[in-house]
Length: 348
Image 1 (tube, helix red, strand yellow):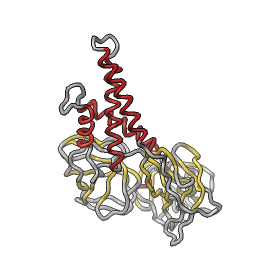
Image 2 (cartoon, one colour):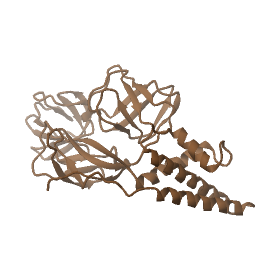
Image 3 (tube, one colour):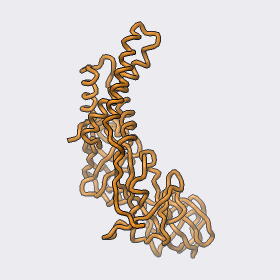
Image 4 (cartoon, helix red, strand yellow):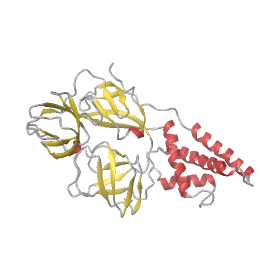
């Protein structure tokens, strides 16, 4: 079973021969654990398959309403469409969805739609239906894997793979000739991402919204958590009876056993009130836990030496800390294998 953050901290103290705080407080070690996870991830990242939304809906405005798009014919708008892009195919104009009124009406950032005019819906920050939005996870991504291939459609019995390119910091484009089909709404890419080791004492909570949340939602209110603390960016979790693993996209403060989290990707299916949410206590493999403990011990030694060696009456002592810190870090990095890239046979 994976070790918790608290257990990793104890492993670090064992290497420092300091069972209780003397030279290093828990907070100081936690700071180095956070840095250590980033450094270790750069050498041995977590490989995650993420399903991204493909947005290819089209339609025509059925009536004119200032700063709104009304389509009573298709009535296919969702509350999760806020932030997506509307392209007027008649006038060649653009706007962003800023509010949701009903399945047949959304509010726009500009007054661009009149009755009878056609439109396309695109993902946030995107300009065509082949583009995928990755803005919510961009800061967690280290590499794109699997020979830079995107799987689309993922519903096929025999997977189909395509090249993709990064067209902006927050968007990728599938390199295919035909426009995506509206019935195939997901594409999948393997990403190399930072590991997660949340500093929590309780790893379960529950949905805290009487109406529940729709498929595609990217935030949820939770209760039943530990009394206080922080759910850190990058913390992974699952929802009972919902497919997929989700990643918290911003630190969330826990107060009185409750918090509201933002996450990505959007929920694969709807959830109901009180549905159980379980946070992943660690994404590190057992050997990486040992590597991390060595590396963090090295960071602690190096940092205390750097802070105190100049002008200290104990300069020789802290010079030794600097040397020991370097040895711990070198030992840790030497244990890391080359980056393992998942391999699949991709059609050319």
